[in-house]
Amino acid sequence: MRYIRSKSKGGTFFFTVNLADRSRNLLTDNIDLLRNVMSGVKHKHPFTLDAIVVLPDHLHTVWTLPENDNNYQKRWMLIKAGFSRLIPGTEMITVSRQQKGERGIWQRRFWEHKIRDEIDLENHVNYIHYNPVKHGYAKRASDWPYSSIHKYIRNGKLNDSWGYDKTCEFDVSFGE
View (cartoon, one colour):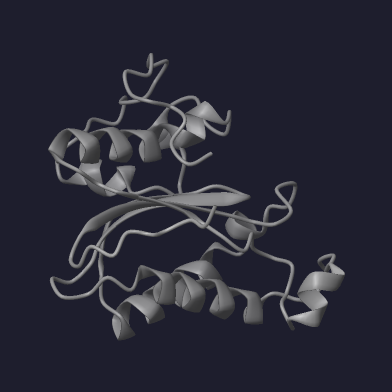
């Protein structure tokens, strides 16, 4: 069966993007490189970054694309390629990837979900912010430095104790 991605223009989307080797800490170890690459792509191919969390081996985001644009695939390709070019080549590269001239940093695919409504958006943003707690990287969501929760706290949308020993009231299996 062939996977068909959403073609909605101007939509809001949740994404999960994983490293090929989930035992590596490349994303947090190279957070400034990742931020710079994402910023450069965002500048050339605009989108609104509604929420993000970066963990050592994967990241989750919610993006809103411009009204007449649906090309999130290009944005992810540019982010992955840009980041990969800046990382020393120490990873295992399969024969398949070698034949295609690929690095072995990222999983080839990513998970995307079109946000349906405000409740769906809130659930996915909560999931993003709670993810470091879920994976045991932090006791409360605001303890994790690589998260948009800090922006939500500054804007008064959440308090800094949100996610502390929180019982998840939202689906905890989005894209993982």
